Length: 193
Image 1 (tube, rainbow, N blue to C red):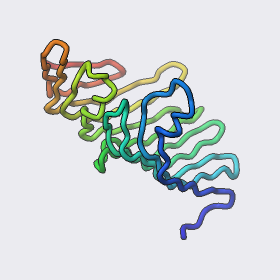
Image 2 (cartoon, helix red, strand yellow; image 1 turned 180 degrees about the horizontal axis):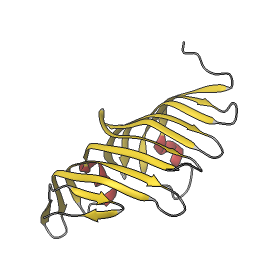
Image 3 (cartoon, rainbow, N blue to C red; image 1 turned 135 degrees about the horizontal axis):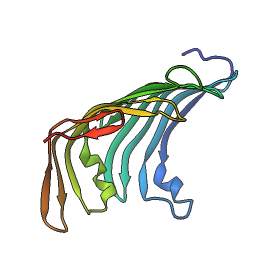
Image 4 (tube, rainbow, N blue to C red; image 1 turned 120 degrees about the vertical axis):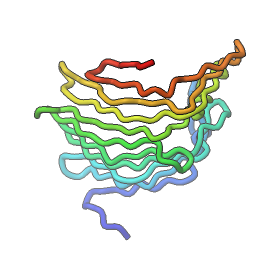
């Protein structure tokens, strides 16, 4: 068995029916799936840390399948700082997002977060469009959020759609999305073509 720091707790959950739990509360969104976790949480000392896996099997919204989600997470936080990462999100067993970063009250870059989106399937968003649009294709790219929370927060990176389309059933039209890279430089988005 894995050793844990004194004061740490291992959270293990399996088979928690999200729809049943949400049904106990009025006006909750129509979300369903099976929640699971294997996470070590440490409250000892001045910091909170978490390391482990969360999953939602057969996630659905309004009875439409989104997919099987998995999250691998490492995080440490105290009263003034946060370190995230590595963190990784999977959809149907494929890694679609990785992220890491830091937040602290001082230094040259008090905020420094980075994320990479790897061929995220746009169809996963279809259950949330209520039938007004049908998305297909993938989105990939890298984004960085750096700077200060008080004045000069900067977003930079690039995103690229691949074989992507938006169908609007109400008008019977499908629009293609350009495969050209979208660049974000100093928080300004630049489109080519």
